[in-house]
Length: 298
Image (tube, rainbow, N blue to C red; front, top):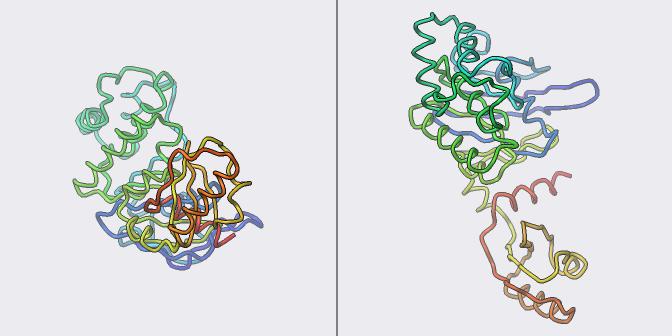
């Protein structure tokens, strides 16, 4: 379905993508995860034919010439790029016309995709007057108007409220069950958990690629989840754990031996007058995994 072999891309002196190789199989929901500037958008733009690689080979839908398969590719860019002064329906009609659909085909397809994305009741509303979540649904509808086999989405839910994010992913799951292969970049670890496989990109390189379960199983340390009466615990615990990361009102302590670490942490915080609200071992999350991977390559 998708193949990259030793693909590289530079922008002046900046290496955006550094000799990456990757395979994506038909029927997958494939996730691309990494910090800002890691190279995720550049990878997607090369896969959709927006950018040309400086070196290496890219094959999409069995073709080394992406122009020949663009009719089977859908794309939702990182930023909303439709026409704000046109209505929802007018935007969909323009996209359909660009793909060479007849007026009758456009009317049928527009009704289908707007119903699917729950935008049909808002078809006469200007795009500028939509909420952030509804704008992303409109971008999704525009990307589906030609019924693509392969769908690329570049951080489609960034800045969208949690309810709209959940609805958006329900729609992606429905499309995938109907046979569509989905390639999505995301900054959200809960979204990465929903993917068939995930590639972690850092400094233009793919550091690791596996299913979410495999990535968690490969994590080499143990995690203690700690809630305490003080918010900044690093000065108290940094010398006795591998790392400390904040997760909302909790901390994840990275340790080698959880039983010994629990006793040591309790002793240290009690001696410092800090109340422990909860302290227990938990399985590592994808965020724990990616924090560790990023640290390894820095």
